[in-house]
Image (cartoon, rainbow, N blue to C red; front, side):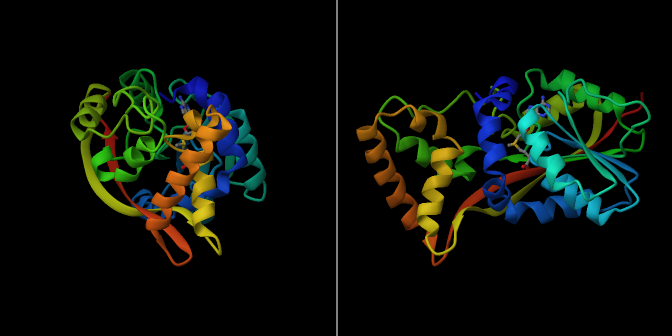
Amino acid sequence: MTDKAAWQGRVGTTWATHWARTDRSFTGLTDRLLGRASARPIRQALDIGCGAGELSLALGRGHSMAEIIGVDVSDELIAVAKDRGSHLANVSFACGDAAEWSKPGFAPDLLVSRHGVMFFDDPVASFEHLASIADHDARLVFSCFRDSSENAWSERILSLLPAGLGDIPDPYAPGPFAFADPKRVEMILSRAGWIDISIEPVDYAFVAGAGDDAVEEAVKHFLLIGPAASAAAELDDEEKGRFVGRLRRFLANSADGSIVALRAGAWIVSARPGRR
Ligand SMILES: C[S@@+](CC[C@H](N)C(=O)[O-])C[C@H]1O[C@@H](n2cnc3c(N)ncnc32)[C@H](O)[C@@H]1O
C-alpha cells in the first residue's frame, strides 16, 4: 500500500530527489495525456497529486493565459515543483490533500492528473470533493496504470525479491494499481457525481534507464522507485546482491541499445461533473 503517509515520508522524499527519473519513465505517456487535457481552451487547471510538477509546468507553458495550480501532499515534492516553476507567473503549487483542498475564486475547468489519483483513502468522497470545486463545465482527465497483466514488469520485479517478500499487494488498497479495474473506476466516479465517463487504454514505453549504461540506470531506478524498492531497502547485503543480480539480468534482457524500456499499460480516464 502507498498511502498519503507514505508520500509524506520515504516515498515522497525519494520522488523529490529523483524527479528526473520519474519524468523520464513517463515520457511515452505525458504528451498523450497533455493532448487530451489541452483539447479545449483552459481558464483554470488543477493538477491533482502534481508531484514535482511536470504536467503543471507543461500546461503553464502551453496556456499562458490560464492559471494552473498543482497540489500535492508531499512538501518535499512541492518544494521541487516551486523551484522548477519559479519562472512561470501563471503556475503555482500548494501543499495539501487534494481530497479536501480548495481556494476561493478557483473553480478549475480542467482537473488533470498523471498517475496521482490512486492514493486516496476514500476515493468516492475525494472525487465528490473535486466535483464540488470544479467549474460546471469542467473536464476531468487523468492517467492511471492498467492491471499487472498489462504491466508484466511490475510482477516480474516483485518476483525477483527473496521468497515471501514479493507478494502482490491488495489491488484495491491505495497504491499504483488501485485504479487498474475500469469497472471500479467507473463506479467510483459515477458515485461521486461524475458523468460522461470514458476510459481509454493507452500502451506506452516505460523508460527505466537510458544513456551509456542504461541497464545500470534502470537497476538504480528500481532500487529507488517502484514495486520492490521498499522491500529491497530492507535486505541485508548478501540478499540485496543476489536480488540486484536477478534484476540486472531481467533489465539487460529488456535493453535495446542505450535504452531500457518496458511495455506499460495505462488508462486515460475522462469525465465531467454532473448537474449539482
Ligand atoms: C505516482 S506520483 C505522480 C506524481 C506526478 N503526478 C507525476 O506524474 O510525476 C503520485 C503523487 O500523488 C501525490 N498524492 C498522493 N495522495 C495525495 C492526496 N491525497 N492529495 C494530493 N496529492 C497526493 C503523491 O505525493 C505523489 O506526488
